[in-house]
Length: 494
Image (cartoon, one colour):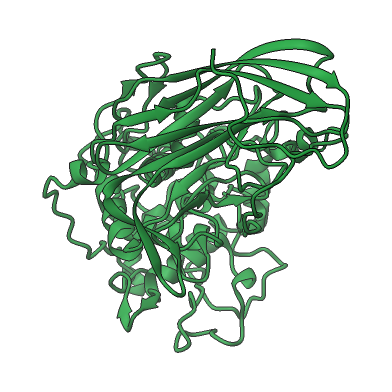
């Protein structure tokens, strides 16, 4: 999963919309993100993020966060990020069917999300420019990892339009967390066919998750504990910002492997408002002094497995986590997870409603400006209402009126009136709920000559409200006028 990049703050309202020389198309291209470039999503960032995100992770790792899979009412596309369960056991007697009663130790994923989102304040699903409690661009890394869990593997953009599943992962923190847990479970379940097994393959043992944690960031040699580019004196785990932890002030984050970062945050939990974000977890790092462990972690052992593309699951890398000779035992997560039925309150009951013209006649001018129209989306129900935006042609652009000129919005959220939405952090200002204002305009560099037609669809990803369809007719090549002003909502509603 990728390291997040802070996104620049939103620009002020634009007098004219100028997209020249294909710059918008170029801005959306990134080879790691798919041929059509990264998606642009908005999300909501919880103000009480420590309690809300922590509890959501606990429910997700227990498979209790989200309802059954469902199909989008407008397009019948499936949305399924359910917890699939876990395999169990050592290589010789590994179970063949995933058991949904087996759970991911919640502190493992809490630490993963902390390392992945890493905004300075801790967990974050939105970009660092978005205040806690606010709505704005989702956290996105340079390699197109989205949200708190930095989901990359299922988020490639080949068509320019996100699937319903991609859009809800990019807009709704609940589905982002659930997908991250599902991916971690997949890494665990990839043993014994494509990954080695630590210990007895017991999902309840923190030590036995070593290879699954390593794999969440990519099972690459850069994360090998004997990577020669890592200082051998760094210790077994990262301090996770704890000034009293071993190595603090001497070694920095980049000195450690990914699994050392995650286990480090489990042993040295972050502190907020004078309290630990989660309880200290006790575990044993791989005992390199023990011959069987040292042999499993020889770089040559890894290289031989890598040469086979990990087919066969690297049995030579299996290592014991319980070693009586060294009094080494495995440990359990001390978090108590009780399903009190609050998952429904997390989901809420969003009901989308729309306001605006259903037809727009837009004009593109030779100087690169274009007219525009406006549609608003609101949530008449409760909670967070994620929605997706689809367009029938790449020359149709949808964004907020205050967005940068190169942004094209693929989905966002609207917030029910029962929730306070933070507008500014200092001084703290709020409003009840959040209504999304969308500006529909033209990418003049992609618009064909003459007249063109297309459509915009705005549709709920969760809850009700149905889709809103806007028919667009566009005229290209009109005379240019100096200092032409584009008036918001300038569109024909036939």
